[in-house]
Image 1 (cartoon, rainbow, N blue to C red):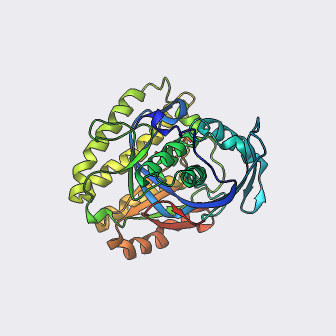
Image 2 (image 1 turned 45 degrees about the vertical axis):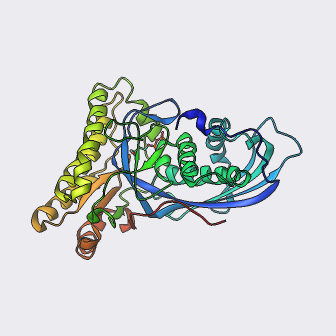
Image 3 (image 1 turned 90 degrees about the vertical axis):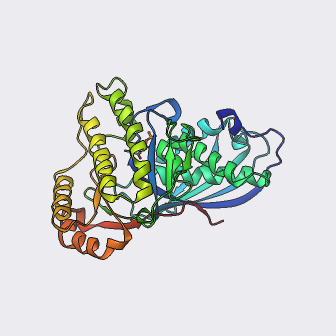
Length: 361
Ligand code: DP6
């Protein structure tokens, strides 16, 4: 699929009014997307687990306008209340996707969005939020074109979500999603995420992700700014090469279920992401002292018990603790006994690998 395959045909008959609702999950990258070109074309490939509990529910009410408007006509509600601060971000999204969904100026929309995870938990909501909203708009096209295949629907939903936020393109399907053109995966694309196409061992099928909320406030540097700092970064080119290599190295690991090798790549990816931040110009640090306390406690626990639990990090201070379901009881005991003291108000979220977005309206 190439970019022009996502432009809708002009002769579709769209419904005059109605309501649509989609729930889209968050995702956690194992190989990190860090560095991008215009419109969230990634500088390197990434792969992520789709999550289950952390998700955004978005409903979209639409009513046809008497004539096409010169601006985008919509109200935005977040958790039941009007949120005008979010409107500019949505206008930018609508401007980017209009070429592919040409009906957007012909309607008035009421968008109502809420997150399953606590407000300002420091958990990125742009991935699940943009995925859920993109799915609602694309569902309007599917109403006008019911013959659309589910493969096309998923690819276009991912393509549209990417135009809102890069990582959102990995929040449409489950459970392991790859995004970004790379020679070791036929069919990989910079334009949309695809279900990881190779064999995945049982060990990874029910992975758990306990998210330790070290800091619940706003991050000091946004992901978008961080991506931008990879332009002209002294280590950018070798980092991009490394992401391709790490992804290729994961293929036999996913197949064999080799957790020890999996951990080496996943933890190295997390630390490399933060190393890129620390070595950009301007440099910055998003980890906090408690992030490091948690990492050291995980290493000590793993050395002592040989239980294959590891960590990954987003662009923030929170820590995702990853482990197979078979080790859940022991890992949860360890987390409760030794790690939650490092969380803000001892808060954490128990999540696990999920199966992708779901329509509820
Ligand atoms: C560190 O997708 O939030 O989570 O494309 O600018 O919206 P934009 O950035 P975003 O970046 C996510 C970066 C990351 C790594 C990842 O999810 O792969």
